[in-house]
Length: 498
Ligand code: NAD
Image (cartoon, rainbow, N blue to C red; front, side, top):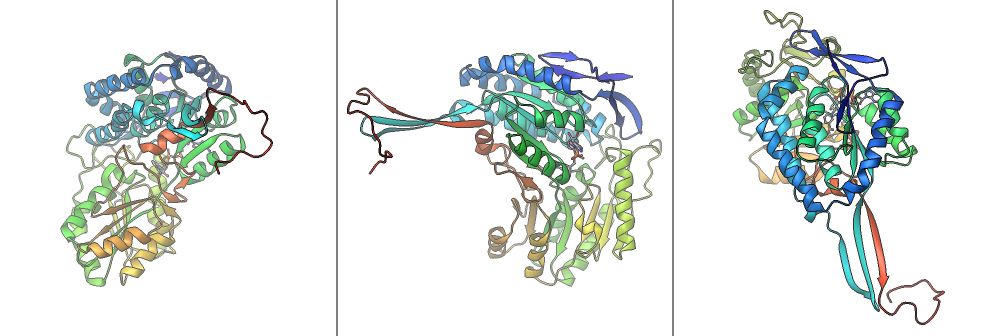
């Protein structure tokens, strides 16, 4: 069986801990590889290689650092198909969707090609008599990224691209479910000209994460995954004196106003609810039609579309969505659907018994639609992370607004309407990080920043955009007086600019 080890100091390294985790083909249920789970010593070896390589990389001028990313982008484009197939083979999503995963990471690599400009500091000439004051942004040193299974291309690149462009060395701990693409990305970074030791990939589970969180040489940790682990990583990193940005789970609502273009809203719900089998942190999992008539018409239009979803393995290039990532995920999602039925929601489309001929052992769940869902039900409170859409009927705009406002999570939300005033009011009052107006999945582009509010995010700086440059650098401010020096002797009073 294929063994997936680590990538340390520019080379493949076999795991030595004796612990491994299975990597499946989610469409067939077959084990296709075993990924090594790193010990503390293996993580430490990666840190040592990062520590040795980082000072020289930080001293490399920013244009040269940028050129590695120009080349890396070229290589990603060259190998896009091959990379997408590799991703899909472990994740299960369609190859076209995997291309989107990679391209959303590639776009952040394009963004950091501007690092010479992005990392420029600030300068004030004549801040006082003969005094100049300037601030520079220096790399943190060694950064680490802990990433989820659902975007094994995009999220590692969201982290390592700005970190490395800023002059840091980086340790990536990918999800143990789909570890092959991250290793391939590290190989391509070497091919693009990155010195060995600047990007290390250490595979593992909680053991490797804890080794990162307590390592004295790692200065900053970026995490994306479920909320309980995000909260744990944030607290533990802070206790150990590290800066941390930790992004968690979600329950994204889409409000459909009575004046919305209903066909447009239905198409949006289909893509955002069932794309990638609902395994996206920006998936729409709650539809909130305003008014009974809107609700009835919406449900009527959704049912046939959900029933005709094409579900297949990643090798089916016409499939709309694939299987879930693991057997455990499949069992968990089906259990939540059962709970929805037990708690009184109306299951209008039931995908629990979906079976695909020839793929009976795959982790498929068919598209599901619940109507008359209420906020006290588990299917409303919990992030299902599967192809399940819940319709919560609202009487009016204020009731609709209140639902996402009161929900624990605050990642994304959307409103469908033709009324600019309602859209403006909604965007201004809602307590959620990313808002779509007639856009179902409002993931900001690379030069803006990505992040939710409430239990969807811990820490104060977002992913990519200028926030990422701040996160991966420390500010140093220099106050200098030239050329006369301290001629008039010591000053005992706090200096001010009065
Ligand atoms: P997960 O929390 O299970 O795993 C994420 C990472 O944490 C993995 O690398 C995993 O190895 C590690 N991990 C798991 N258990 C751990 C533990 N007990 N201690 C320390 N580390 C541990 O998440 P997942 O299932 O891989 O991903 C799905 C989740 O990620 C969903 O909740 C989804 O909403 C969320 N997500 C959020 C965003 C965002 O930007 N907010 C983006 C993508 C995914």
